[in-house]
Image 1 (spheres, rainbow, N blue to C red):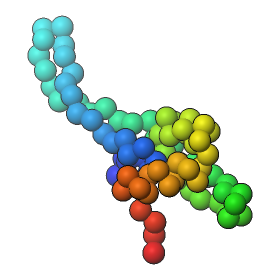
Image 2 (image 1 turned 90 degrees about the vertical axis):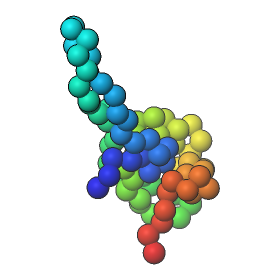
Image 3 (image 1 turned 135 degrees about the vertical axis):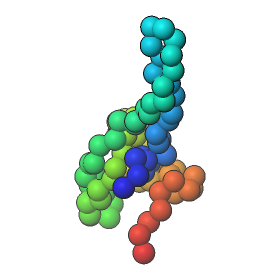
Length: 81
């Protein structure tokens, strides 16, 4: 499973470790992803999403359905058939 947030689309970034001697080696910056179950009261069902903590804050602010609709319109969230 790829490390991509299903709401915000955050994914792994690449950069360098820089030592005291300024030698550079490649490294990866991982998003803070959590597997979280959310309840959609309008549809009376639970959904499990793999979201970043920033996405959890967004869901708390604007609501789950609004966040999911925003992700669908941006092409980030794809529903299973």
